[in-house]
Image (cartoon, rainbow over all chains, first blue to last red; front, side, top):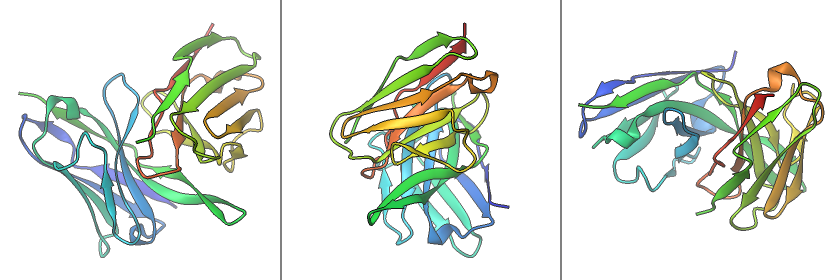
Length: 125
Length: 107
C-alpha cells in the first residue's frame, strides 16, 4: 500500500528548531518529487518546499533560509528541518508525493497524489 | 511567483444543486491546474489535474475546464459527501501555489 506517515510535530518555543519526518511505504521517495504543505489553524493550504528526484530543492519565501528539506534514501524518508521558528509557522504540516499524473502531447502534468495524515507544529511560549 | 485567486470564498448549496467554483492565475499557466478537495481534519485529495482530467476514482459529477488564466470546477449534482473545501493549485512552475480555498456548505 502506498502510504506516507509524518511525525515529529509538537510544541516549540519561538526561535527553536524541530525536524519533521515523513516515512514512505509502497514507493521510493528518491524516485519522486516530494513536497511539504502546511495549513495554519482555520486557514488554507500553503506550499512550503519541494525536493526533486534529482536533488534540487525549492522553498516558499516565507521559510527560505530557515527550513531545509532533505531525504534519506536508505530509510525511504523525507525530512523538514525547521529552524528559527516563529508563531506564524504554527500549522499542520503535510508531506505529499508529487507525481506525474498525466501525459498529453509530451507534456507532463504533476499533482500531489499521495498525502500523509499531517503533523501539528505549535510555536508558542 | 504565480498567484492563484479563487471565488467565491464560500457558498451555500443544496443537495442536487449545480455548483461552480472559479480560479484565476496571475499569469498564463496553460492547463497546469489541479483541484483538490479537503474535508475537516483530513488531508487534501487530488480531484482533477491538467485542468480537466479526472483523477482515478473521482466521480464523474466533478469536472474542470479552462486554460491560460481562468479555470472552473463544476459539481453537476451536489451530493452530501461533497460538502468540503476546494482548492486550486498551479503546477506550471515551482512554487506550486494554492488558491485560498472555497468552502461548500449545506444550505
